[in-house]
Length: 175
Image (cartoon, rainbow, N blue to C red; front, side):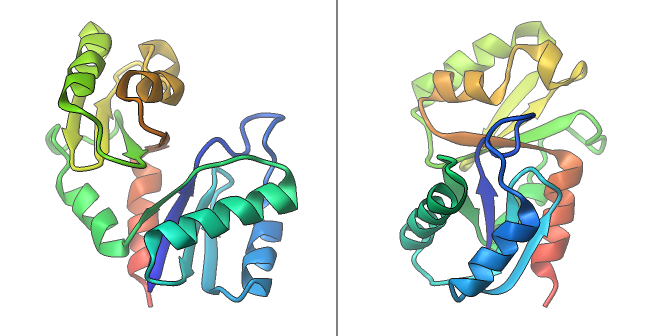
């Protein structure tokens, strides 16, 4: 089964270094097929077991043992990533859109806190287990970093810009 693994908090400046070429080698050595990475922000496409929980745990263990980095592996199937693209809630212009991929669905009350935090600096929409953020001044100027999103929703998350989401969906759909 093909999966897109989004690793949380890897390769952030000088910390949490996970070289993608080395990660690919280690995943292939561990028996995974079709391993591809996309840019250095912790995006991996691979063929793995059908158990989402087992694969996430194995990826987290492998990254911790190989690189000394604690991460959360958030997994999506290619069709789920394609659905994320189709569900874009802010019209045709995606240039200011980011997606926070959540490890689980948050409580409705927590989503209200996130919408409140967005205030006038952007728009927020929860669709399934993804939070779409329209941030005209970017993530750093919005006050809605991934850490803030996690804190408000009380769910592990990892953030990607729209171009990365679109590229991953395309790569995952390839044979």
